Image (cartoon, rainbow, N blue to C red; front, side, top):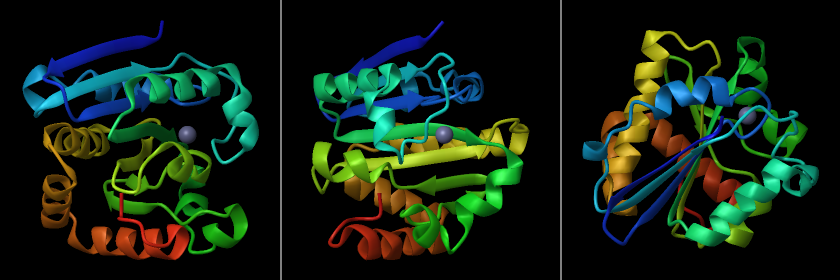
Length: 202
Ligand SMILES: [Zn+2]
């Protein structure tokens, strides 16, 4: 059963967290999402949607957004118009090096993901939606953890989700992230600039 929850602390910003965007990833991401409580959310709203199993199609393929689940996600973005959009993914450990490879841009057309700690990775969302559905100053992030995440990875992943949930704007989020993960945020800034042009790191 898909999982849907809204934590409402006021009007704005709207944050949309989507867990398990494809394949069986929802089985893992729900473990993290269930750790977010009302107290973790700053001003505005947090909308949480965790997907059921679907066939695996990469979000880097146009085809994804024509699939049933892809269309559902487009609908949610259109309906809630989030200023903060987070995709929660998980990966099998054998894919770690492919996801973080410096050649990812050459091979997949997108920048490598960056490890924060304990196998938790951040990156941008699919170029298909980043520049067309969101404004430059909206916050968009992909978060990955190992699908069979142990305690340490899960804790780090949940911690990032709580930092995002509790931040009321980009400034607050960047401040907290830079304090917690300084070199990683610098790298994210560089990748965003190289890939999207005049874009912020998340
Ligand atoms: Zn994924």
